[in-house]
Length: 99
Ligand SMILES: NC(=O)c1ccc[n+]([C@@H]2O[C@H](COP(=O)([O-])OP(=O)(O)OC[C@H]3O[C@@H](n4cnc5c(N)ncnc54)[C@H](OP(=O)(O)O)[C@@H]3O)[C@@H](O)[C@H]2O)c1
Image (tube, rainbow, N blue to C red; front, side):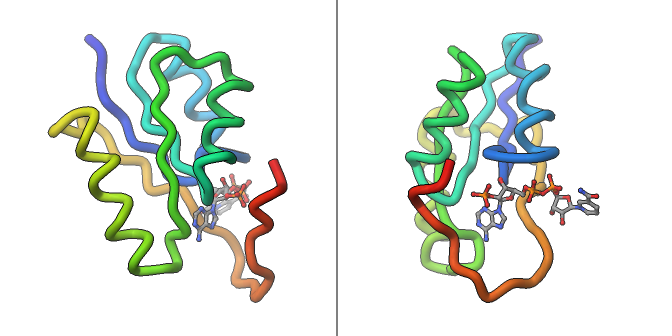
């Protein structure tokens, strides 16, 4: 049965590798990235027909709140939420041009 799954930080590492088999099994995965471009790039790289790109810097409260609508829009129900985004504290801002 197809599930709708949100994965934050799906553009790299564990998040991206977790998305891969879920997409291969046909689940709808909301792929979250810092930027829409980064999420879209990951979606393209995974050749993911059932993925939906969403974006936002999760250290920015306004961007977190803005993320709610595109997450809610494709479906009112999230079956699974994988709160994966994170890392070690750094003052280096994200580089939106880096994929
Ligand atoms: N790997 C380990 O050994 C290990 C051990 C313990 C805990 N963890 C935790 O497991 C999670 C995944 O680890 P990982 O090794 O896969 O890390 P990773 O390769 O650095 O991937 C982290 C993901 O989170 C995204 N991200 C980070 N901060 C964000 C923010 N403020 N807003 C939006 N996106 C953000 C990154 O986006 P960009 O790619 O755009 O930067 C990336 O997609 C992290 O929470 C980490 O702390 C990992």
